[in-house]
Length: 212
Image (cartoon, rainbow, N blue to C red):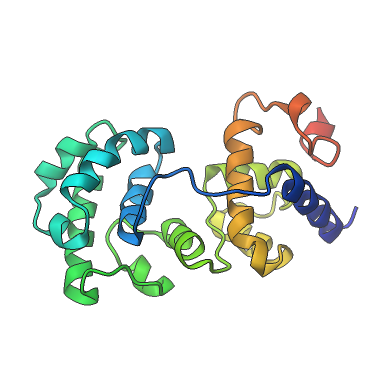
């Protein structure tokens, strides 16, 4: 099967099986999403959603958080992975938003990646979720699922390499949704240790399932 044909079949499956695919992080503003995505690095969305209500209530915007200290923010996020670093990033990120962008989250990729705690993956999440841009954030789920299905080959060994292939073959208007398709599929079906191949609607197409 040619690669574009595989992509077409995978997209067709997800369009039917998962017509609505959105982030599972809870947020109401771009700033809140940015904070939640920074906190979600190497941590579950479920855990992030437990700690953010109190954090957002007391620090709802960049102005409020920029006036806090990392030690204070730490108390809100201490059950999250790497809480010390993330608390520092949130405060310094908020300060930069106030100093350079009047407290608003920029939509430009380069400007996003200049913010403390924001790498390419986080910037892509912001671009796709908030602004609907054709940006593909590659986390561990997207990376794993893309390789297992065969959407990318073993030559694509980095998240950026996977991102480039996915954005080449997925229609641009579907990329924001496809990002969530792959994440949610990896989170609930194509698990890292015990993938549920017998329950997967893509098993007939999947390189991994057909190699067992």
